[in-house]
Image (cartoon, rainbow over the protein chains, first blue to last red):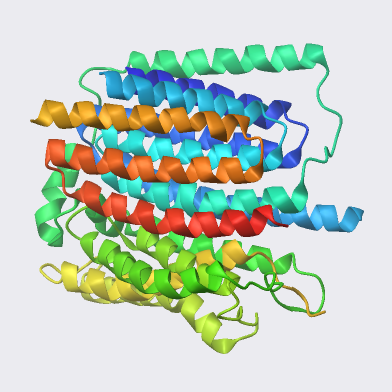
Length: 84
Length: 302
Length: 83
């Protein structure tokens, strides 16, 4: 119950941060929070039945999210360098 | 329970502050703190595996990446912020989205459809004690292979963004004082803990991604202190370290196709030694990949 | 005994949350970094207490990982903050 509400709130908050921020880096932070919320949704579903499959998917998801974030940061730095 | 309620409230408050604060460095620190508390939340949700990954990759090296990016990029807006009306509309739609997700989670069918029995039934054949590792290695072996390749692809993407003639990432500022000392004391301990986490992954929470992240962090620490140089992009040994894991994994997969009749099928009774054979080079490749991702794209030598 | 340990974990979490004030208010970067470090240390305390209360020894591994990465993160934050 607690975690389901937190997961939903993080999803909404993260999506708002992704859409409403004007600074690109803060959009990226919002996107990562949205990801955290989605992963918690998986966690809530997994905890109800003690199911290992959603948990394995979350671990995969965390690694992919990190890889995507590094790429996004590199793109932002390249963009900043071309504007100078 | 009071512990859960406290934790959830703190995560929510911190996440909201991270979204709204103007200072990019502060937002990065806020993200790390949120991730740390999220790791505790995963413990309370009964999944130490995910807590380990969140602590090592989400809050740990992910947080370091974002804080670093904050000091490089600052808070220059790339475009005009949404008008107050647009902002209200976005907030309203996001709140609606959150309500929808919450309703869906609270009205899940009972008992929830799940794969517990299928996963438990497959466990004895693997020789592994940890169901999450069994799912990652046996059931969804292809996922894990592709995940390791995603790290490799991200490294290639990073290199593709490098300017013409770039050879290696820009060296860190020259360091004297406490950092070189820390960079000599911590890595030996960190490497032992990382190997323990990889090894423990067979029977309990742990695994190659979490252990690989710690190995990467230890190498980056030595690099920050100026004790090691970043490898050149064209270094052959680096290329082999990056592809060793996926190559062995693919080799075993093809061997499974020949010997057991299915790609990535593991011969009965041999699953555990074969998995260890895959995990060792895979840990090396993941650690090398994550470290390069943390360092950023190579730059031209000055 | 388990109840007492869990209560201690709640107490440790409360002290961690008090430290969050410095993450939020700053005012300097050093304040925020130190508060994040306190969060790591307090998190380790919570994990150790929960491990003792519930008998789940895997939590000790998590505490170890947190300890190593907190030291790494502190060094990285300081280097970033000086830029």
